Length: 305
Ligand code: PMP
Figure 1: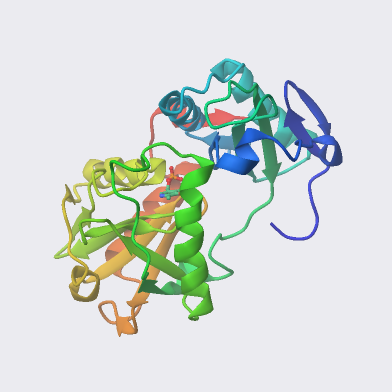
Figure 2: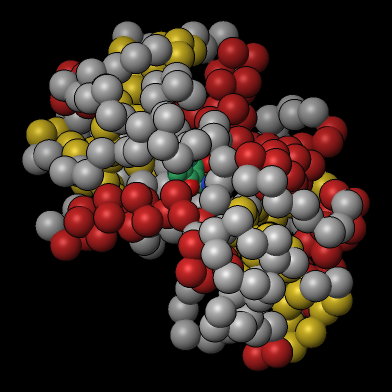
C-alpha cells in the first residue's frame, strides 16, 4: 500500500475511521499468526462496479477459519455487505478488499479461547507486481526457501502465519533483483509463487501444479481453468519438476492481486522467446473480458457494489 490510507474501515460490526481500527499488542493473532484473511478485487463494469467472486472468497475465509477452530462472529451475508459498504464509504472506483478475522486479546497461550475480531479494509491497488508488468512480464527466480510440508501447515487455509513463508520467498527474490520468487514444495516439485499460482504452457495446453503441491487453491487459478476449458484450451493439473520452468513455451502467475502476470525469464533463462506468449495474452483477454462483458461468466461471479 502507498503512503496514503483510505479514510474508512469496517471493524467489528461497523464502519469507523481508519485510525480507530486498532488491535491490542497482546492480541493472539499478532503473537501466533492466528488470523485468516482474503484478498478480493472489484472492477468497473458496464453495469457498475462489481466485486469478483465475492461469495467464493468469503466461503474460503470461513473454510480457513474452520481449519483453525476459529468461529467468525458474523455470517457471510454480513461480511458481504461490509465489503460493499467499505468500498462505498471510501468512494473507491476499483478496489482491493482485505477481509480479515483474527484472534484478539483474551488470555495467554496457544490454545487460549480468545475473541475473534473481524475487519474489512479496501483501498486502490494497481498491478501488484509493479507498473507495466501485465504487459511486459516479470523476471522470476526459484527461491532457496521451500514451501511447508503438507503435514505441517495447511496451505489450503489462507492464514496469516502462512505468509512468513511467502515473505521469505518474496523478499529474497526482490533482494536479488527479481520481480517475484517461485517456491518448490517439500517434494522438490513446483508449488507456487510467493502469493500467486503458476501456469506453464506446453504446445498450447496449460499445465498447473495440483493442490497437493502445498499451494493455495486460488480463485484466479480456478477462474483460468474454467475460462480455458470453456474456450477449448486444454488444462492439466499435474506434478511439475523445476526444469519445466525453463523448458515451457510460456509461463505466467495468477492471483487476485497479481491478476495474470506473464513471466519472461526464470533464473536468468528466457521463457520461450523472452516475451509474454500468445496463450498468456489470450488468457489475459478472457480474464479482463469478464469486466468489459466480452467474456460470459456465471452470474454470481459479479457482485455489484
Ligand atoms: N497462492 C498464495 C500463497 C496466495 O497468497 C494467493 C493470493 N491470495 C494465491 C495463491 C492466489 O489466490 P487467489 O487467486 O484466490 O487470489
